[in-house]
Structures are given as structure tokens and as C-alpha cells.
Image (tube, rainbow, N blue to C red; front, side, top):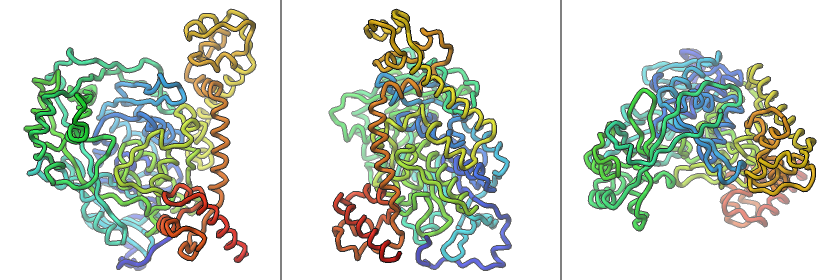
Length: 639
């Protein structure tokens, strides 16, 4: 899997043995990708070292202190099902919970939690320290150590050298990061107050890995005591019992409200007057930013006819009055940012505690990776998180889990771990990245999955527990908890199928849902298929004692049985396509039966299966048919 030699340092035996310490896996970076990669590698049985610039900022929420949302909440539960930490940390730190998309039906509902920033960071560190095979070192990595085309360790700026069987790079926005506030302030930084990783970025480029630049941004923070919250729309959290983690039931902190306000004409005038002072529109930044999280400057320029835009005030924690101003991401000068804030209704006298800023950073186009997130150029080198061109804590965590599992597999000589598109949103995320690449920071949506009805937040454990069990990622207690939960769900499904409700027994339940009463005794399963009729309520009417969470999976399976059956048939067809593997050494240039565009795209992407080839833009159905014939001919010729 290694590429050509690009003047790389060849490691001799004596130098290698002089390393400070040798472990199985080194994870560079302590953000959301790095922490999950470290946890997964350690749970896989690999002795793991987490190397980060500052041990105090492990698990830091650099931007919005929130976890979950559309598709993202499902990823959190998938990571948790594999034994990861994001869901558990969220449960320990959440100060507001909401189930999004509830009105669109339980099959597309998405959990989201506002978190106490400090509690979350401390929870992540505490959860990581449970892992006996995980160690921590505070240091800045300067360079990779290679033997031929394989990574065998890293060196740090202070001269230490650590050996490893695999290395995972999860440096977030730190690779040659540069903060912009207005046109005159440009600060080399990975985030506010923290130095960038310049030498590591230069080292990776030197070794032949292509780097490009993206940008992202963050809004100002305010002192909530100086906002007139009484004038704003108050948004309370849901009071339902919900945990992101399948394995633990942590006590939740008390909830805090969020507040909604809007931009208006005065704010638009301020932005228009000072637009050229913005780092983005003044020419200081030329790289592409996230389309789905635009700056306030972008909103005003690109949607000039929109009379207003939403602004959410979100609490930063229980022990602070500071609030995150969601919707006003900006790179304007601080004085202009204050004017912008005070043009928002309810914020006329607000005090700005921290200005917003834009940040440019290196990322590595993910088409340079295998489905395991291992580099095609350098064996033993894995990438996860924003360095792959994504945005979002949850996307980073999902990649971190995949990279950590496969780094451990690489170091310990085990089979790689690849999640299919019909198996997990994490599988969709990774496949999109390595097959289609990115031209803007990638964000996960339910619409990116052709199997989104199968990939729900309620069934993440059912989908991924077999993988976690096969890889021995769980403790005995976690395994028993999972087995008990899945068994109870099956029991409830069986009760729905077998229990008859006497005539009139469910009248109140059906009346509340606006549904007509049946003419005779009816199976609970038949009534549960009706829109708005809760399986939990029907079971309660039948005298069955249970809890709503235990009924969730069975309720959805009954209501959407026909749709789910069709989607599973489609997924089975995909599985058959994925089973036809394509040789890595296949010379696409000589396959004359394929179009020239297909040959070029396939040569560049080097898909590992027919299914992956089918998702490459520019490869037609006829090209796929020809590819199958070419591969079969090649196999017959070499048999």
C-alpha cells in the first residue's frame, strides 16, 4: 500500500531502538477524533499513546457546545454502540436536550444536547482514563519517522522519539492554522490561544501527501447578564428520559433554556458598510468554508432579500453566564462585531466577552485514503477528523472510531474494519469521503444516505453491537447490558404481535391520536401501525408494564414494516456489489471497454469494490458492467 519514495528519512536499526518508548498506536491530537481513536485503539487491545499539545484541553469543544442533531445524533449513538465515549460524555454534561424532527415521525427523530463546556471536557478525560492500555503525553509532534514507506513512529519538538505500529493524525484545525480577525489581525494558531502545528504539516507534505486549505469560523461570546432575555423567545429542553449511551445511565445536570432572536435591517446595514473589513470579503482569506454553517457576512451577501436570520443564544455552562451566539459567525474586526451584536433585538446593551474569528488550516483530500482511513501513500498512517476535510464534532468522532479500530488492527496484525453504507451513518461518511472527495467542509445529513430508514438513532446498538462483540470492544457489564436491552426489545415486539386488545380497551389511546376504534378485538401490532398511535400507550392499556425507550425500536419496526422490507432488499443488492472486490493493482488504462472518463476516475480513486466504483461520479452503469466482465476475465486468466 506504500507509494513511491519522496526523499523520506530511512530509519536504521540503531536509531529505531533509541526511541523514547514504543507502543502499538500513537494518536496525534486530543480533540473529538483523537479521543475516539485513542479509546477504540485501546479497547481493541492495542497499547495506545495519546500525544497532544495540551493535556488540559483534551475533549475541548472549540466551537458550539452542543452534540448531536440531524444525522449527527445517530453518529453519536453509533460511536457509543462500538464502545466510544462521546455519548457518555454528553450524558454527563448535557444542560439541555431536544429531540429534533419529532413531528416528522420517530424514524427520522434526531437527539441533540447542549452541553456544559467544562463538564464535557472533564468527562472525556475521565472516560479515557478508564482505559488501562491508554497513556497520555503532552508534546507537539514535529515529524513522522519512516522505514521505507511505512510509518514507525514520531518525533516531538523537544527531541523525544516514540515508536509505534500505526499512527493516527487527528490535528483538527491546527495544521498551519491561522486565525483572522478583520484584515489587520492574523495570528498563527490552531484555535484561540493555542499554537499551530507547522512542522507536522510540512513533514506530511514533504512525504508526498497532498494538502489543501479550508476555513471555518466561530461567533462571538457574550455575557448573558447583559442581554435582555425577557424580550426573547425562550426555548426549554425536552423533559423526556433519554440517554445517548446504551451502556450507562448517568445522572443528568439540570437543564438550562436557550433563547431565540433575529437579525434585522440595522444589522444588514452594518455588515454592508464594513464588508470589506471582513477577512473573507477583504481578500485575507481565499479558501472555501462550510456551506451549511455560513458566516453572517455570507448570509447577508448571498441572501440579500432575506429580511432576517435566526440567532440563538446558548449557555456555555452551569458555572458561567457566558453565552454562545449561534448564527453570528464572523471575521469582522472586534469593534464592528460589537456593533453587530448590539443591532440584534435583546442585545442592545450586551457585553462581548470574546470576539469571533475565522481560521484557515490544512486538510488532506480524503481520496488519498483507503476505506480504513489509512493513507494510500504511507502504510501505518491514518487520518481522522477535520484533517480529512470534514466539519463537526460528530463527523470527527465517527472517523476517529474507524481510524482507531483500524490502526489497532494494523499494529496487531488483524483484519481491517470497514462499515458498510447500509450498516452505519459512519459507513456513509467514510465512503463519501474516500470515494467522492470534498470541495467544501463535509457535513453529514440524513439525505446523504440511501438507507436512512435503516440507519436510525434507536437501532444503532442493534446494528453495531455484533461488530463491537466480534472485536471484543466491550466490558462484560457492557455486553450484558446490551444483550438485556436487545432481548427486551424483542420481547416487546413479540408482545405487540401476540397480544389482543379487547373491544374498547384502547379507546382513549386511539381518540388521542384521532384514530377510529376497531369493530372488534384487535392485535396491538395492527393498531400500532396507525399514524400517531403509540405502541407504549397500547401496551399500557393492555396492562403491560414497560418504559417508552424499550418500545421505541419495536414501534418503528411495526409502523414502517413495508418500507423497511423494501430498503433491506435494496441493501442486500448493495451488499452483493460490495462483495465483488477489485484488485488494487488493476491497470484501468488498458481496459478499453470502459469510457475514457471512467478509466481516469477509477485510476485516480482505485475503488476496493464494485459498490464503491458505482458511487464515483463519472462512472456509468455500462462502465460498471464492462468492469465486471474485465475483472472476471482477469480472474479466469490468472486461475
